[in-house]
Amino acid sequence: MISVGIDISKEKITVCALEQGSKIIWKPFDVYLNKSKVEELLEKVKEEIKITIEATGKYHLPILYELKDRGYFVAVINPLKMKQFCRALNFRKAKNDKIDAKQIAEYGLMYWKELEEYKVDEENYRVLKELNRSYQHYMDLRIDQMNYIDQTIHQTFPGIKKLIPHNSGDFSKDKLLDFLEKWWHKDLVLEKTEEEFTEEYKRWAKEKRYHPNANKAKTIYKLAKDSISTQPSHNSKIETNIREGINLIKQINQILNRILSQMIEISEPLEEYQEAKKFSGISEKLAVQIVAEFGALSKFKNKKSLISFIGIDAPPYESGNFKADQRKISKRGNAILRKVGYQAMKCMMSAKDPENEIYNYMIKKEKEGKAKKVCKFAGLNKFLRTYYVKVMVSKQENKLLKVA
Image (cartoon, rainbow, N blue to C red; front, top):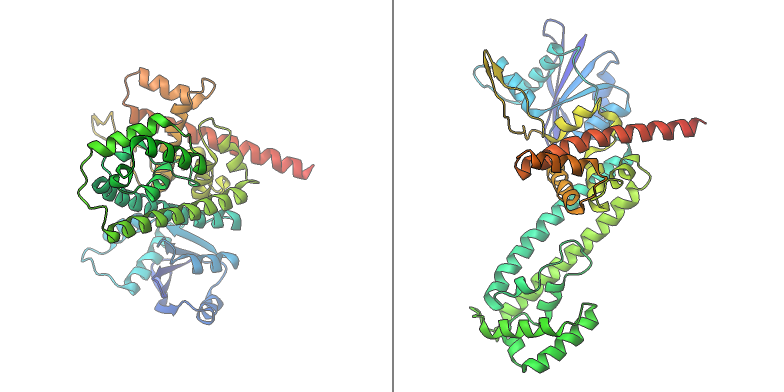
């Protein structure tokens, strides 16, 4: 049995091969990540070996996909698990690429029988995940930019956010941003009488397809009279800064809308997406994010694997007569899925569907005196178990239909 360890960096990989007894077959050597060098490496590789690599975000994907396309056995190891293994091997904490490659190969020998072959997702799942990471990136940008605009507006029109909140659920329009494009400073409102402003506000609301509420206009006018601004309205630089900030948010909103529509289009034929949508409270937006981060559920060996994957499991902690009764979730898993899953549970609670078993389970836990956050994570645990079973049943049924 031969174990090949590959240490991966951005532009090159370091390869080492060991056989039983930690006898070195290939001394650690570097291979630069270009087509010809990788081809030379693959010519050396034999089919009976097992290849072990450490997960490194995206840097390990090119060599991983190339090896899997050639049909080799590849195990991808969690970096924390590999770090703990290397600590036991090397007391002096020596570290370089060649040492790392040798230690990865030794890991493969040590856990030869326990190594799990990495299952590569189909193309549509991989594209979905990449789109979702892009979606998360632009969402973070949007939140940062909106917070910045809110802080700036607090200086030019204090209190307006309470009267006209952001529309966070729909990226296609935002009433507060539309309002600020026209009246970014309270002095612009006070240039007119209350009656004139009310009429202008109603015309603006009709044009933008908002409710032309005269009482709302009067409340805004009163706020403008009572509030104290700390920035002048005649400064064109402040106005330009605010308008450019608003335009940036609107551009990000358009990008988010486009990414979301692309994700939904790819997800439509997938059983994972169709089953996620069936739970009351889970919107298309949440469903596609769940599918994108999990990928194909068939790669998970059981429903407990989903819980471990997102890091909401609470491992047992016992020693002698001591047994911990309450344990926090491990948080060693997919942080994006934890956030999306928690949002899904909040939406289920808001939907209040008595026929939803997940909702009923969370209500039951609340009545037992559990904290609301604990109840939602308990509901997420139950949701993942139920979701896994339903998806696998749906996949089996569709497989039988295709055979028939």
